[in-house]
Length: 363
Image (tube, rainbow, N blue to C red; front, top):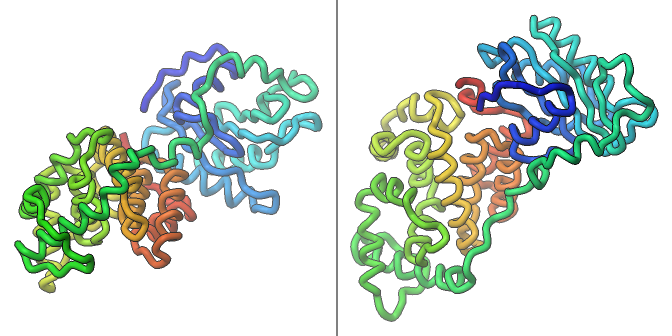
């Protein structure tokens, strides 16, 4: 996202930051990289604990800015509930950021703190005691909710949720009949034709995944929901979905064929494997957004014993979109259900180490 900064002052700039993030951050440091007076997006991290090595923290944060090829400078904004009565909080962190930026040849356009009872610039020589009045900022209507808002799974009709286990049983019975795939569930008394039709959709998995992006998530029938729950609970099928939703239908075809060859002992193509680590071509963010919305609804309707797969997929998609806080929430929820879930563990480690996809730093 690129926005021309026309802020008449710090207060107007601070009204821009929540719009860049899509939330009103709390206990956070936000860094807004700049190039020729334009913002290049915004990055949010949790404020470091009191006993943290602020120089190490600052070096890591400035290092992320350095990964943006056109970044020339940045604005740093700390958000905290701490009081500004004895001076603006996070002064040490701001000084460390300035030192690290100077060492890397970056400018610091401004360093601001929005505290619990005042706000101001660490560079202002005329800052009043306790900072400026917060009322100046609150009048500018920031987006509702903090960085954790929006991670809660959507509400799904109770009748659909209740019907999913039976739909999965019907689907597995159909797969047993058609493909000989064994089912752990008791087969239904009567096999519905719709279940056979749903099972046949797996004959062309990339077509299913592509078509799923057009589904009305507010009106998903149980069999469609069951079909994606079943797929996302299986790592090999889930990974095909991730590669395809990060690229296109052709990418899904390649990923499916690569998966088949890998299971026969061949090497998995490096360019497809790199996608999972956030490397390669930058995905279409609207496509990822659509996929994330779909998968969040699938996770909400999935039975608890099969929910970890959709949750882990949502975690990866959120991470790929740069929403590490949401990604961590989904990954932790998946691991609470399945302690050793591979993808969820990987995404949680990404979040814990502040690792972002490479394409987050490229326009």
